[in-house]
Picture 1 (tube, rainbow, N blue to C red):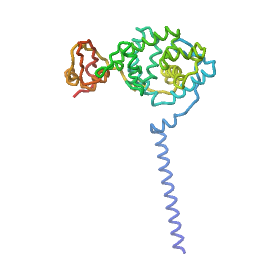
Picture 2 (picture 1 turned 90 degrees about the horizontal axis):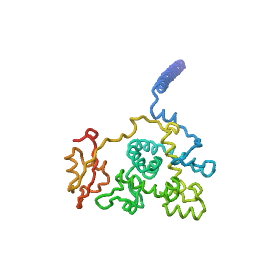
Picture 3 (picture 1 turned 60 degrees about the horizontal axis):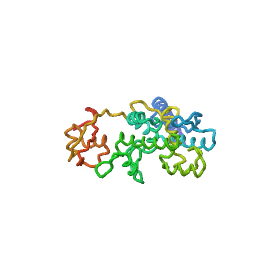
Picture 4 (picture 1 turned 45 degrees about the vertical axis):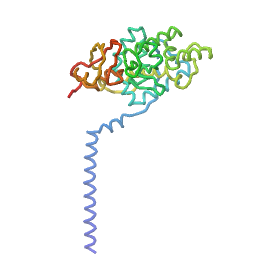
Length: 314
């Protein structure tokens, strides 16, 4: 009996000692976690979802959005919420805008088109040379027929819808024609989705004279609101919870242009002779569709090349 009692006392003491060791260890870990929280923990602690206050002075190209209309208010609220809380897309938007807006902005100014139209390119393509299911291409999502009508070369060898400078000028031609027709930059922007004929038909059918008074299909109803939402977010990133530094953004690559009037049978070899590889050539000239430039007519083309030192070459 005494032996059993001694054993129980020994076991109890060991248990107490074990608990004390665990408690001290846990405390150390707790202190360590307090001192050195992980990035994931920081994000978890900082992440909250809030309702948004809609600014009362929103506009597109200087044309005020009538937010006193409850339908307009709710549609604007939706687009701000959707684009604020689609965080990965939002950060990519800031990164690409920093790289490509400096190319688009001076062209809009030269063409007499309000700067707000750069956000239209942002919603159309995310500033990538994408192709839609309907066959529209490039940053501005230009259809083949319209591109050709506005001087863009489009064939198996060349597709200038993917030439940012030329495609931006072609888009500007559309915006100016639409503005002349409708008398409003907002309607001109809205017609880029619905077409000038489509918007004109709906204005007449519904006896309306404003984009905001039109009852359109789901995407048409959202179109200008998405543009204005991105304009608001891009110009006020911290207000909408986006945090980044200049180093986080994609940087414009300084370039120069080479005039070419003759065919180039092998662009990969031609690129190598210019000190770059074929991949880099295509990054800066996505309008070149093949590994050759036919140019049977001796047309003058300008090929864009990066200045030395921006790409690592073997």
